[in-house]
Length: 424
Ligand SMILES: Nc1ncnc2c1ncn2[C@@H]1O[C@H](COP(=O)(O)OP(=O)(O)O)[C@@H](O)[C@H]1O
Ligand SMILES: [Mg+2]
Image 1 (cartoon, rainbow, N blue to C red):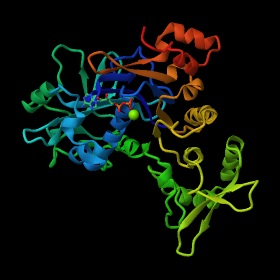
Image 2: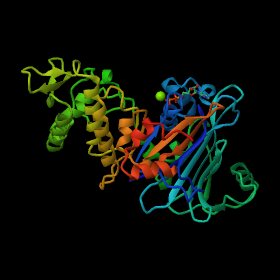
Image 3: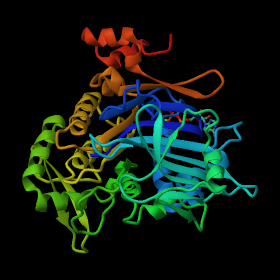
Image 4: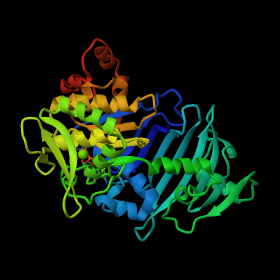
């Protein structure tokens, strides 16, 4: 199962330059764990971090111009870190399979004189040892080279003096022969190269990465969406807002009844009164989601059930997906949840993330200590806002005092609550 090992974000909102996990040139850093939680006070950039994933996924699907305007982002200028003039940059280091080489994808997005966003550069490379990289895609201003197959590429020492992707581009344009490479020119500089090339079988490394991003599940779940009345018909995956919750229940009841029952048992243990959940079809073909309480004869419908119940139910259902998404990103799952449920939820996410069957990698932002109580220091990252107004990030396990205290049995969330996780 593919896994993100590291991520660097530059000039994106309050995240002027932050790195999580390990990148190609940081072999001594630890990669991201199967579950990652980012914590921090209000305004430190948790939503920005969540949206960095959202923006990348949208840019792949819609192109950068539309993605800058989507989901209330307000356009390139509002997204770029205030006071900066350089491009917005993302670098993702990921591994397609456990024993494969890690791969880096880098993209820089700028704005032209008329205020239109476009892709400045895009590269993909395999990370070799000793700072060497095997480039198999580079595109500068929509022009560049790509290598077919699973192995070809151009080996480059990026630590060599004066290395710069634009210079590489120039030297190649000036006539250097590239073995096995194909020259390409994109028609539209607002579209990602990996969107076009990733659709072609000749480029399996690019296709795999494109599929990986397309498979990300970024939850924009709202209890009110889950209360809508969708048309009946089983659907295997919860959509990002959760308005097909009833359809997924229909699917699970029909296709995976035993798994569904086991999940209901789990929920019944955690939420008093919930004993059975099923669906009812209305005369006009819509779906009602019913929650049956032992103490009452008549069921309650989703419209009457609490936000917290709907949320826990939706998240647990998501984890039961027979084909789980490779990457699951949830912003502040705590809203509306009873604190004891949070620890349960954190444990469920964690178990799911580290499952032997190779389940989803989970990425969560939170400001709830109870959620963090269930986690280990290397799983938790602390975002803070510096005096100059930009955020920095560090791993809780980098602080030996914190690591020691957790080893002695103090839960991490309580350390946060008592300000031990604050910068010293
Ligand atoms: N383009 C930008 N440049 C710099 N800072 C920004 C930009 N856009 C928003 N911010 C700052 O980011 C902060 C909000 O970050 P956000 O991700 O919503 O925080 P959180 O989710 O942790 O509460 C605000 O303090 C806001 O001033
Ligand atoms: Mg937020």
